[in-house]
Length: 420
Length: 102
Image (cartoon, rainbow over all chains, first blue to last red; front, side, top):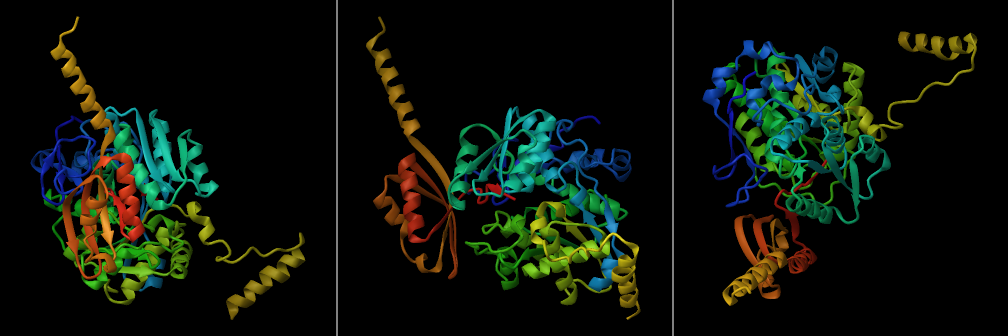
């Protein structure tokens, strides 16, 4: 594919000021976040359903709508995960039609973060960075470490020093430099900002954030294409910073603006864990001021962001599309994980439980109509958060090594149970 | 031998660089709980510490006050100013809010 200047500028989301396409992320005037802006007239000349369909099954088939200047150099195989029609789960949740966007099998680290990281690192290489970094407690760290290793970039992963060893291993294995920082969350948070500003490293979720965040749009593009080039009536998205929700909204608007899909009505709903639901609470209250949660208390660590950077914008996306927000307790999260596994055969991490349980509530309350069609965004694999469900999905039955015991304790018991 | 004016110029550059090294700028979001919303904390801050405060955005309701602030001064002085605000109960985040992702 010939490279054209589809990606034109960075633009402040608050005041609209334009900035050059560098490693900057906030507006100098109002500290508003910068995001990628495009030349849609130029893109319209290049992109079409036919053109997209002719390309490899990866997230880069939507290349014109991603913020890099040349061909991608990191994560060439990422994306185009399955969109699964989940009829049995639909029946249990009480909805006519249900689809699961299954990023539990995203390549290479089994979470949607591979989408954002491959865009951030491809751009980092274009900008000449030799070292890339992130501060993360889980999926992002794994993805940066893996994708940087594959691309031959040196990487640093900053973590709070008390992070569980299991989570650290998932990054260490790729040969990344893991630095544990002693201190309270807020101190660690500010230090990471300082390091990002000081050493000229490409911090994927700080100075490369405008590029990084755009990678999330590919989840929305894929959903439209896999549904047969249409925007779903309802999309349910888990919210941490709120970025994924806003980018799925942006993806639908871009496809619609470019005429790739019809301009149909759609609603985007957000879900959070009750122990850390600042965005959901603000939307329910009818305000767009997100009140911070000082001490998140939930098993859903991947969504436990007390001061969500894109909360304000997520609220606007939900409100603009007529969507709603819902939050679910930790018990409901576990039930959600189990339902997704038992009725759709997909094992998701805790954020997936939040999405399923949140969708259940939204259907029950009528915010998602029983006769409607919905897509649930499932963002990471269950193997990453096994501790959340230990002891909550039953136990193996132990028998002696003879057929009589099997017949008595298993076969006969199960037959009796199925007749009852 | 180098001229006096050249040496003076060099001296000014050295001073300039020292000033730059000592000075740093931090961009923050401050989140005020309801009990602190009416207290003139930024005025107190500029009296108490040698830092330059520069507000870029602010939004206040009866439940929360949110201010985006640039702080300029010596790095240690900035750290002390932040610690003082936190001691009062103000939540002080970097402008990115969350640099630590999941």
